Structures are given as structure tokens and as C-alpha cells.
Length: 245
Image 1 (cartoon, rainbow, N blue to C red):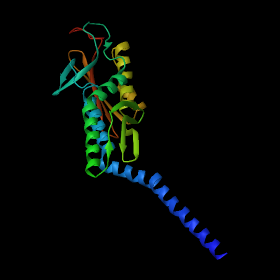
Image 2 (image 1 turned 180 degrees about the vertical axis):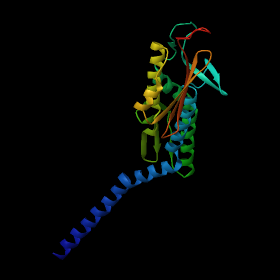
Image 3 (image 1 turned 135 degrees about the vertical axis):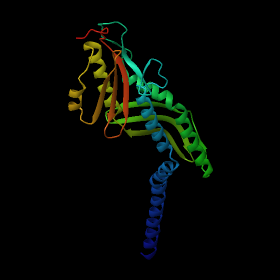
């Protein structure tokens, strides 16, 4: 009975040791690696780049290099709705504002995301990890309250394999694009918009509307929570000098 008890005890100890090893390699070690990834700031690097890109694009109505602009107060405001004719409402220049913003953001972020990924790989190798990197591909998605970067980057670190990285940034840029789209619809249909009523409906945003003498209207939307701005110009239902409604 004593020998059987010892054998049972040894088996129990062996099971415990194996369990501890499995827990370490299947749970603790990957979690540790994820923490190290955060330390390397790959996701953080991409998040910072996304935030900077959204701020820059917002100042240019969603374009990296806008060309059709109106100068005002030392800045160039991109025309999103325009007409050269008197008595006519404007034609929307960018029918799908959200899609355009996502596409412009994707192009603007390519070099930065590649740099973030390369730096993370180099840091891992410097720490002694055996790393195999892959081709980076990604998509930008704007949703209510959040901006996302979904990254495909097949990567092997030691025995661990990673394929997808998801980065999220709290942002109201989606909502601002929807509000701007509504303003543009009013401009295209009626030649003007009621931003006072809009601010009642959307109390988290300041909407400045500045009428200019040539018929151009400058719009500046500002998010009260994050401070993000989205600004653009419209020229609609212009009357000749000396005439008015």
C-alpha cells in the first residue's frame, strides 16, 4: 500500500507539473507576449498615427492634398458642394464622404503603419526572439464612436503565430461625416442649411457657418469631446450683387 501510495503521489505530481507547463505555454506566455507587444507600442504606434491622420484629414474635408479650395482666414477650405451659376443650388462634389475619408486615410497611413510594423519586428529581434514577418495589408473602418484599423500581417515569433491586429480609436469622425453629409444635402437641395437646429439635435458638436460675400459658405464642425474638426466650403444659390431673396 505504501508503494502504491508513492506511485500515486508521483503521478499526481507529474500531472501537476505538466499542467503548469501547459498553462504557461498556452496562456501565460502568449499573454506575456501580448504585453510585450504593447510595450513595443505596435498597436499604440498605429493608434497614434490614425489619430493624427484623422485630425489632418478633417482640416481638409477628408483629402490629403485638396485642390479645389476656398481661402479664408489663412486656411484653405475644400469645396464639397459648388456651382458657378447664379440662382442655382450647388452640385455635391463628393457623393460618398465616408468612403472617400476612409480611402484617403488608408493612403495616408500606409507608410506609417509599415514603419510601426517594421520597428516592432526589429525590437523583437533585438530582444532575442526569432521572428518571421509577412506582408502588411489593412483596412480603415469608420463606425459610430470609433475608428478602426484592421491589419493583416502574418507574423511568427518563436512558436507563436499572429495573423490579425485590430486597432481601435475612440473618435466621432463618423458622426461628423454624417452631419456634414446632411448639411451638403441641404445645400444641394435648398441652397442653405439650418445649423442652429442641428446643434440642438447634436449637442456634442459646435457647427460654425460663415457666409462670404462671393456666395461661399464656410462650415467648421468641432467635436466638444475630442476636439476633432471637420471643415469644408460650399457655394450654392448665389445671387448677383444687388439682388437678394
